[in-house]
Image (cartoon, rainbow, N blue to C red; front, side, top):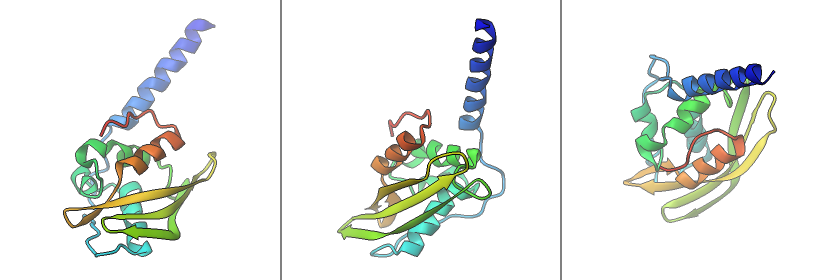
Length: 153
């Protein structure tokens, strides 16, 4: 009994590692950046879609993350698991919004089959003229979803 449990746990660990380390699909949907003075809800929605619903190159996704390449593992994992994209799930950024200088917040709603829906305040930071999803929000999402990813970016 114990050996079958250990085998199952080992297989699960291998499966999770494969998802975390797998590269996105080869099709590159291009790149995306928000460079407007104040981001719109449409732009924020498009950025979230780009990050978690497309197989874009890691470098293109990194350009939209405060943590850059170190943080790409989060949207890559979410994309590979299919958590917040059709047919398993969805996401939407809505108000109320706040805006102060180079910091903008909005509300992210997302859901995935078999998981509770998530509603959380998300922060973007304007860095070198580009609005990027803040590390603090990325880490809050990792914790909320329960992904085995350390937030050390």
